[in-house]
Amino acid sequence: MSFTRLPLMARLPLTTRLVLAGAAHLVLATAVGAQQPEFTARVDAQTLAVVQPLLEDALRDSLPVDALRSKVLEGVAKRVPAAQIGRVVSELADEFRAVRTGLRERLPSTVLADAEIVAAAMASRHGVALDDLRAVWESRPNGSSLDVAVTVLGELVRRGVPAQEATEVMSYLVQERVPLSLAAQIPGKFDGAAGAGVSPVAALTEALRVLNIPNPSGRRPGG
Image (cartoon, rainbow, N blue to C red; front, side, top):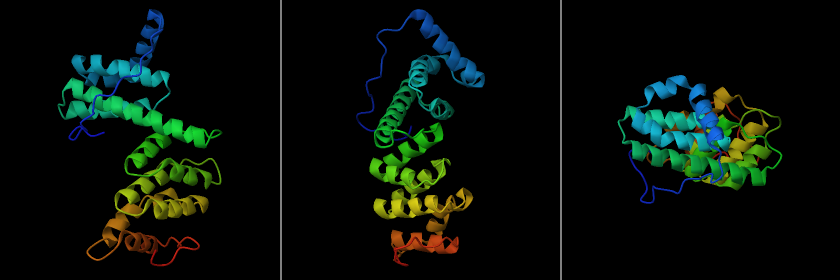
């Protein structure tokens, strides 16, 4: 979620815990602050009062809390009102929950790292379906992290590459163990190839050529 452009239905209901002992609440609040003391030092009291319950809830649910803290700090740096920061952080936490739930249903035996959940949520926001994300995970030959590959997938779809085409390419790169440092350059090379009269598929093909990445088997040279 962006601080500069919020949807009309920005205020989503917060996940609440109706049965929570006071002592447990205090322990959790202490844990949130203790893990990132510099975080609380950089956030004003009003904003902290709004986001602290959200971070505690995210900690209970094992969501990527660091990503939520970063969103809070972004809002503080931009002088966004506390209530709006809370709405954005709540929505982002809901995105993390939704994509994690969807991936767990499709990949029940897979352990999802925080960075992968964040990348998957951003890719989903750009229009990548959960089944496409599953295809990338299923192409993984080992337990290597997929946050870079999924981030690139989302960026390609955001740039207009059809989701199926982008998924097939990224699944191939993951399966062939193309170095992440090389895969991470694809969006930049894509932008360099894109222009008037150049389709997104053709720009992707050119990006792969420039990076000397073989075209996936069965994919036509022009896409």
